[in-house]
Image (spheres, rainbow, N blue to C red):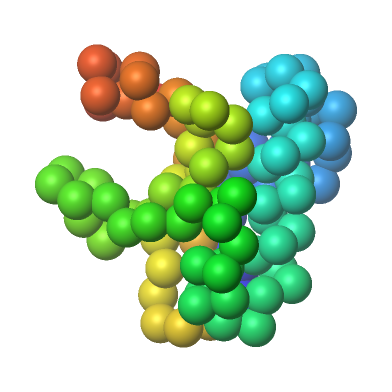
Length: 106
């Protein structure tokens, strides 16, 4: 699949695991890298829906057009999906915080 990053920081955190772990801690950092690797490895977006642990689902409201993928209990990888084979990694968020303060995002 064609994967892009919404920011240079997100790309760096994927390419350098130590940065991801420093930013989000070991559990979220490792899962972020695993999920991005899964995006690269997938042939189509539909393949990701088959992995229950990913909990890939569309968002609504002010996030209409974006999708969330579970990293840990409350941390999500947010992406935008364009077509069947293109995804842009947008951000990593604590979904409790994003509901409370939607302008303060990672």
